[in-house]
Image 1 (cartoon, rainbow, N blue to C red):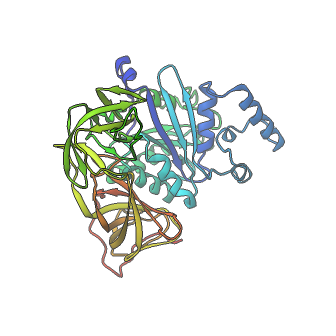
Image 2 (image 1 turned 90 degrees about the vertical axis):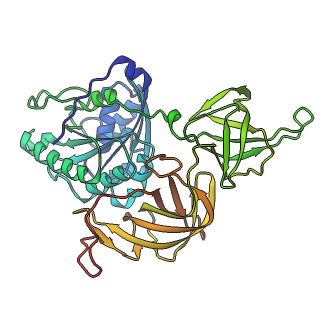
Image 3 (image 1 turned 135 degrees about the vertical axis):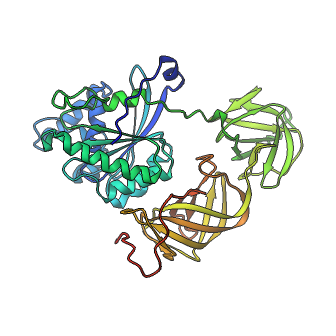
Length: 448
C-alpha cells in the first residue's frame, strides 16, 4: 500500500494553477456521488443548482439531496442511476483551478473513460470497499497506465458500509498498488472515503482516526503536476492555410493551427513534414497581431521565409528535432467499437490534423487483465480489448512515441464506411508483461 502526503510550496502551486483530472471505477462505486460531494463541500455549487437537485431528490422519495444528480445530467442517467456520457465540471478553490471529467463505469462505456482520461494529469479510481478490486477496476487502471496519466488516486469508497475498518482498506490498497506497479503506474495515493456522508472528501473523517493522509481535495490541491508543454518537442499540426489575397496583403501566406507542444520563435529554422523541406519562421501572428514567440496551447499562424508546398495535415517542427517519418506504426490500442478490429481491416488513421488510409497488418497480442499476460496473435480485438497492433499507412506520417508526446504520439482508427471511431492508439507504447501464451492455451480473456 502506498499512501502519499504531498507538501507543495506556494511558488510551485502558482506555477501549476490548473489540474485536469478524471474519475473512473465500476458501476455503483459512487463516482457521481463523490464528484457531487466534492463540488458541494467545496462550495462550488450554485444555490439554484442545489435547489434543483433537492427538488429532484424529493420527487424520488429521498430524504436528502442526491449529490450524484449534480453530474448525471442526461435523462437516461437519472432514470437508470448510472453515468453514460463524460460529464465535465469546472470548479476552483483558493489554491487551484480544476477541470474534472466524470467518466462512466459501465463496461459498455469504457470508450468514454478513454476520452475523459486522455488529457488528464490525475485519475481518481473508485473502489467499493465491500467488493474490492474488480475487473473494471483493473481495466481502468490499465487504461490510465496506457495513457500515461502520471498520478492515480485509489479512493476506497463506502467505508461506512464496512464499519470503517482499517484492515479492509489496507487489503484493497495493497492489492491495487501491486497491480498498478506491474502496469508501470509511477504513483498511487490510497484514500479511504465515504462520498455519501463526506468522510475524507473535503473534510477529514472523525470516524477513521487511523488514517493520517490527505483528504481527496487536499491531495488534488497539492499534488505536483507538471503539464508545461512549452519545454517539450515543438510541434504545430497545420490546420488551415491562410491566403487572403487582398490588396492590403497580396502575398500573405500563413499556416494556422494550435501548437501541440513546445515553443516557436521568429527566425528559427523549421522543417515541414512529411516533405522534409526546411525554411525559417519569418513571422508569427497571434490573435491578429505579430509576436516574436508563441507556445502551446496557443493557436497561431506561422509565416515562412520560403514559398513551400504546405497544406492541412502537415507538421511543422524545429529543424533539429523532427520525429521519424514512417508508414509502419506499431502501437498499443484500446478498441472502443462494438465492431471488432481484425487483421486485414482497412481503416482511416487520423493523426493530428491528417487522415490517411491504412490497413491492420497484424495484431501481435491482446492483454489479459487478470494476470497481465499477453495472448499471442488473437486475430481480432473486441470491444474494450487492449492489445498491440501493427498498421501500414498509405502515406508516410511523422509520428512521435507516445511517451515523448501525448498529442503527436496518439491516433485514432476510423471506419471508412460510416466514420465510426474504432480504436484509440498510442504509438510505441507497451506493457512490461510476461511472455505471450501459446496459441490454444487458456487466455483468461474477456467474454462479451
